[in-house]
Image 1 (tube, rainbow, N blue to C red):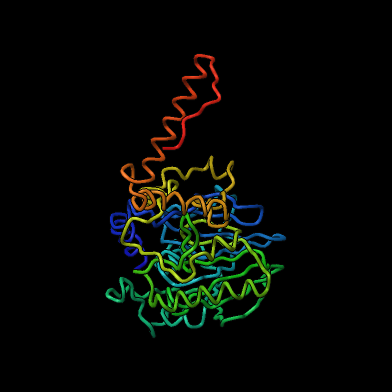
Image 2 (image 1 turned 90 degrees about the horizontal axis):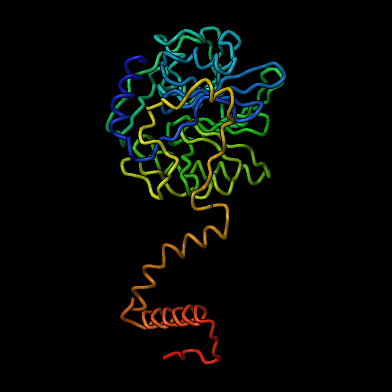
Length: 352
């Protein structure tokens, strides 16, 4: 069902989410010398390389251009023998499904033990607040089932699996070499910071919020500040920004506020994702519009929003504030007149 599900998502979700600034994927390219990204419409898949070993994080849609875009990064599909899966939604496992591209047939799949219940049919994946059941995903790859807190090595690469249920019942995030946190659909990065991922796509939004808070506490207790890399909204290494709205959920059915000028109108339009850019441009971190990690910017933003209310409270130009404005205007006009005539009298207008 992957091919049908992928095409269904492209058509229906493109129509439903365009203009709402919800999906803001990275383009294909490199974040740094270790992490590369392939864009598949609104979804990102990642490759982490260290000491000659490359692992893949999530497997995207059943996407016809996967091999092409991997070539932009000089990543050979034949070298990918380990794939970490955050969760089993078709925009994260499409390349591994039975009717997928078969580029990764030799790869071992790492997935949470609870999440695997979707693959076996023991659990049904529900979205749209539980109203719609997605088709079962079928994967034939060898699997390694993971539990919360499992730590394992792939070559010289250290991986820790951390359970964050909510979006799905068995969603995992992966902390790689203690320096990179791949979060799948756990965190949604808005222009003013991170939120729990889109409300209508979660199995349990309350549980998702709890999981996000637990994840933040875990990192802060360890004094660990990795690069946080999301499945649909870019990355950031500022934990204050990433976890600035841990008790809130992204509401996906309306246009997002605050406005994000960098957000694409339609995340499924990938016309700006090119090989030239993939080879020549680094993928920048999410830049906060209102400076969620900057106190001065937060204060400035607050008072900009409060100014109209303050004006009303003070009576506008018909109240005390209005009189002050008139006085200042008169004072400035007098100074300009004196300067133009080169006459500077000591007397100044007195406050009425």
